[in-house]
Image (cartoon, rainbow, N blue to C red):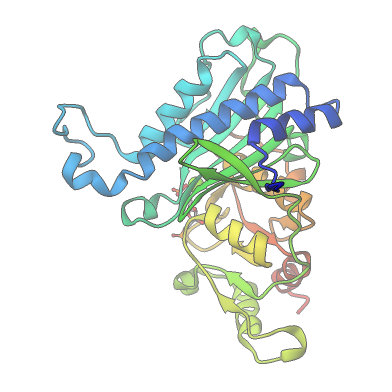
Length: 337
Ligand code: AHM
Ligand code: MG
């Protein structure tokens, strides 16, 4: 009897396949992606133990082993910097948790910059709701890694070599792009591998979900309010009303909408005049993925990937998701509807 088996594709073999197909996805980029995937396994190991905080010790205290207990986002940040920094493949790194750039040891061999949000969705960390890591990779502008500087990090999102995210949710999923489609992998803890589960992700042209923090209604501008009211109207021809889905972890809200279709909006508000989300750690990496999946990402008028960054922790309004939905949101924002 011949047994047929589903083909299992590990993330390492997928990176290598991409390397063979596309010259700019060279062996160095493959190594960088492997580093990120490895670091995310370390973060996952802690995230799945997060509920044990009461037993093992609360952040800021020492646990039963006498170790100092760190907040999970700071722990994730350290794990990623240490795991990735030690290989010398990145000349420079920037993290949402660090005020300024990080120069890893042995950086003179790396030709790339890594920007990352170690644990996105901080308000959800302690309550067992999905959180995630978001990353973005750029090639250095110059060819001397020893001279890597802030300037190498402040490149337009359109220059990204690769980007991706990992969601630590009901399962752990890693999604990435190198500019050749979007691919998703699910972590199998029994073998310690990410396995291809979502090849060539394409997002629907329009969706049924909108993700906006409506609790900040009093802070929203008139365009956003009119847009939300529009989404709630009954009009079967345009699929309205839409349903609200808002987790409060960008990475999880984005991932759901990517697969099902829909729109995520974090606009400029009275409180967050430039929006809340970070251009370099959140908007750019997700915009690269969204566009590669056939979606759209803007700040309400400008393409996210064309924004010239001026500072590492720059914030931006974010409209991201299905093309038609983002275009409609922009029309309300501009006042043309
Ligand atoms: P964080 O990086 O501190 O976690 O903040 C970013 C998060 C996003 O994940 C999420 O979309 C947003 O903040 C939620 O903000 P709000 O609570 O204002 O809706
Ligand atoms: Mg974040």
